Image (cartoon, rainbow, N blue to C red; front, side, top):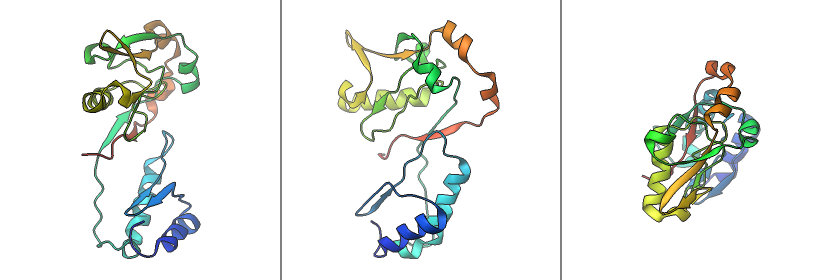
Length: 182
């Protein structure tokens, strides 16, 4: 954990800010976020860390690296999981804009880049391709491969037309932190 007052900082987060650390190690604190994590909750974490910079052994200024990918929920994840779907090649002109019917998880960091019911973006595809290029197909959990081409299960166009929830149009985009590298 960063600094010398680890337990004091973890207690502050838990007891005063209602923020739970998932994992701590020398020089790092890890927090779990989900597609339900709001901008307000992120801001609460930023404020909490900013308020306790001295106990972290850091200077007053805090910089947060922006390596987030934005996504938009189109179909409830449980509905996407129940579809028959179809396998489509991981090519930008084919897959971007389609709705994922599975998760694709690059390692590291082990955080899904494709989520059930989420519209696939160019940035999400780049994360998967980067993992494949750096370490091969085995770096991405959930991917299909045939004849050196890579595939992902998406909703068929008919399924998407039936299931896309127009009420989701008013929801804000969410952010997914997909890489601790770079």
